Each structure stands twice: as structure tokens, then as C-alpha cells.
Image 1 (cartoon, helix red, strand yellow):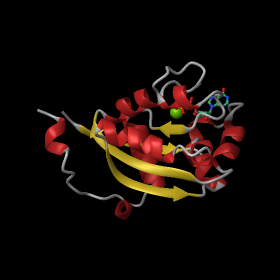
Image 2 (cartoon, rainbow, N blue to C red):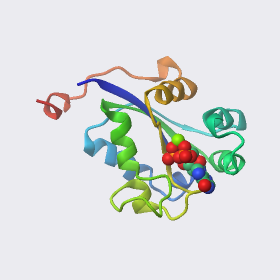
Image 3 (tube, rainbow, N blue to C red):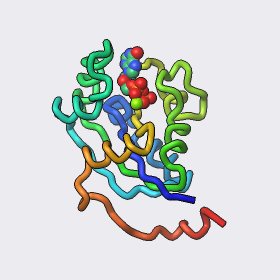
Image 4 (tube, protein in one colour):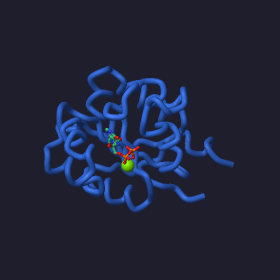
Length: 151
Ligand code: IDP
Ligand code: MG
């Protein structure tokens, strides 16, 4: 089983509404390893690069405005199948459609305020980790639960 890295961001509404602890706690309880974490006041340039694939869509400008409106918490997470696992824990893009028990399903109401971002595939994860983190901001370490997570 291959370990994967993924980029996760607690968006401004998640920070403002006090969900940093709960969200991080969910990843910790699932056994996902945090290997990078920082608070960032996102500028327009970074936001536009991050959402570059959505340029030209009607929600592009509002989404850039949303994630530059107040600090976010950026993370690099590592684990087996981490990209898909984190997407599952986040729930569907629209919190109205996200299952209860997921982060968006439990905390959100509106697609334009959906609390969290997570990379949607291997290439996106690599692009986003490199965009948000310098190599020296990512920690390599052994966590004591690692031998208990797999056979
Ligand atoms: P994702 O975050 O689940 O990967 P994407 O389709 O990649 O969803 O959209 C990126 C972000 O743009 C969403 O998380 C949300 O913040 C915003 N967004 C997407 N679609 C809409 C929309 O129809 N209205 C408002 N905001 C949207
Ligand atoms: Mg996406």
C-alpha cells in the first residue's frame, strides 16, 4: 500500500467559526499524519494560482475573494490513500448535498462557504503542495501510531 500526500486548507469560514480544532482532530483520529501546517493570509496571486483551473467560471472571482478574506490553515497530510480518504471525510462540494458525518455535511449550508479544501487527485496534490509549502516546511518524522495502523 502506497502512502500519499495531500494538500488541505481550512478556509476562512472554518477558521472564523472555530472549527480548526475539530477538523484537525478528525484527521488525527483517522490516523492521518500531519507533516506540514501553517496559518496563511492568502494574497490574490496565490488564490488565483490555487483556483487557476476554475478561471473563467462564474464562481472564480467570488471564490478568490472568499479565500483571501481572512486567514486559512494550510496543511500537508500523509497516509495510505490519503487523497481519496480526505475527500471522503470532507464530503461533497455543496454542503447541502454532503452526508452528515462529513466536515461539509456537519458544518456547512452553502456551496460558497464550504469550510475546507482538499486536493482532488495525485497531480493536483503535488501541484498544490508545491504551491503552498517550501520543502523545508514539510517535516519527515516517525509517528508512534504508525505500526498500529496497518497489518
Ligand atoms: P471542491 O472544492 O470540492 O474540489 P470545486 O468544484 O473544485 O470543488 O470548486 C472549488 C471551490 O469553488 C469550491 O470548494 C467552492 O468553494 C467554490 N465553488 C464551486 N462551485 C461553486 C458554485 O457553484 N458557487 C459558489 N462557489 C462554488
Ligand atoms: Mg477542486
